[in-house]
Image 1 (cartoon, rainbow, N blue to C red):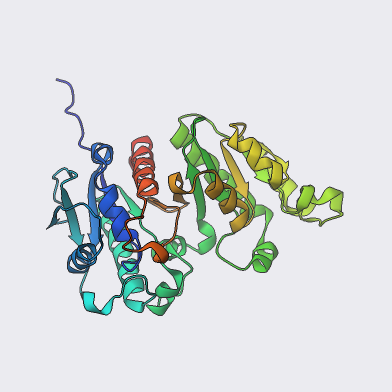
Image 2 (tube, rainbow, N blue to C red):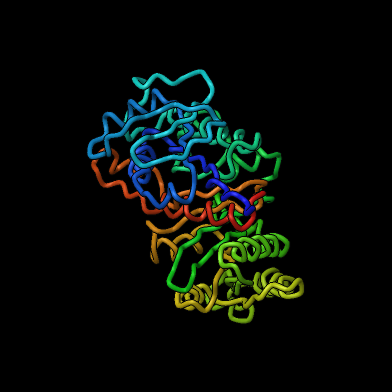
Length: 348
């Protein structure tokens, strides 16, 4: 007899900082029926806090909120929000103001994502999709990390340099992935810390995840650091000293790599489908072009973790909280990317 079809994977959603638009994009994204076909979705949250926040935001779908156990096998559906509770102590909804930085908001964001990671560790979920958090609120809550990427890396016992952040943008050519060799730090320290080994590690992680997303070997390119690729050393020696050796090392291990290429032309070429992925050397070099090309369709994927974590590619949107403007497209794309990665490599 043929094997029975396997149920969709369990994918956990977190709302990020509840004072921001995270709860709204989760509530709106939950209405996407295709997401429920791809996965059995659950929100990991303080249920009482989430219910209170959703009740005071206008323009959201009206639906039941049901608390379930982590191992509950039921499918999810658009008309019922399934919630797995975070650990106690609970956060009093009265202590949390919309669109305001607070320790309570930072703690709720951190607790939900760490609880979600715990469920993946125990085998009751296959992936985590995170909503946006506020870094100041995270620090106010006592978490000395720049964001989700580093929080999860440390929870898994990794160093910050063991993981990379990739922005993934689905396109007519399949998609464009941008990984960052350095990330959340001042640009002067990012440049000082840039290394050939770091660029190679980012490029290898990028090539590996793109192969899973595209179902074929990807073509990647490495961006230059300085204007015009350094102009033969006139604008700096990082290209010859750090970046060119990294390109050679990636080629030597079988990555289809081009570079180094000045960033002002590289992203135009990539947007036209010439490359599937780009290694950017610092935060804004990669973030600005991807967000210009499709901010609300982009997805954040953490590379190097022992499990699958995707996220929206935007922030907490304090300026539009409760105004009916929060757009769930990035969340829906993040769910699709997580489901694709689970299907390509079920063990994560």
